[in-house]
Length: 321
Image (tube, rainbow, N blue to C red; front, side, top):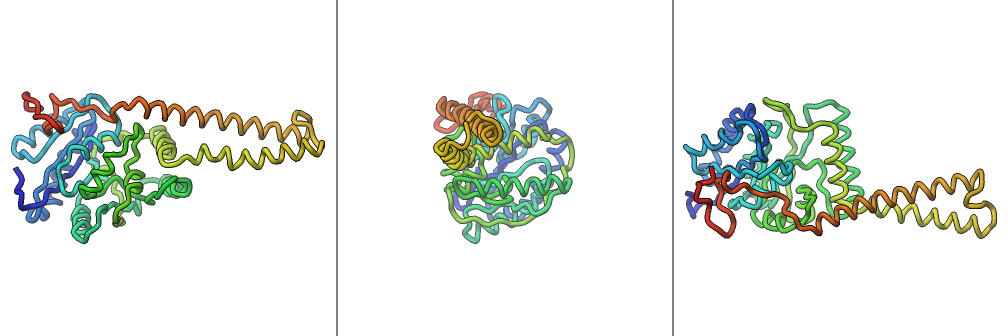
């Protein structure tokens, strides 16, 4: 139990098949937050994306000696962002921290996050300065984030990591956003509040294998753009209006036929290309609108394999193990 006189910090750790890395990471995390325990109560919430290895057993073993270690297990792999959201939804802390378990985000930086919170900031986040990966990937990520900010419909925080601290009031606003395709960094920018970025170097994974590849990174980038921006739809207007004017001028002047050779052929190709582009992106956005309209939950928790109490009812009689 936590003391009512002390503020509580919730630390969310999303996990999926991390049996090799988790013991190394958790020992390091506990050492990093030990000084903060002199002033705050701390709970650890591991959000298990339906791991198939011994990840869950490891966490339950630690919980036997520390009741402030909690486990949320999802019914299937809903993806990284859904895993984070499940932790945000059930965290009780006055401040909530999210950190990955692969060791790429240094737990030692948490002390500076807490300092920023004590200074009055509502969001304190890791600002990815360098990464231990090929230069082409580093530059590609930076270019992607800057392009996303350029086309985003609202504020977008450059080089922000999901390695961050947010206050309870920020958390409350973020989990209110109903979206079947959540993008936490974009949601945090959208809700506002005061923010502070702390530059850091992302370290190599300390053990195990990454769950990301080039295809998943590309799919994630596309999904983030579609969530953060309507620019792909607006392109039709930006390009289509000038193209329509050119068509009208050419037809009225009788200079070219829409289906004739030469310049008219090029104009026809431009018309058809824009039409194909419009159909593709209208279809993509309509599909996303349809899925949002279905109001399916972003994640589903397996309460019989979870140790936190469901909101609005008692914890499972099985003890959630």
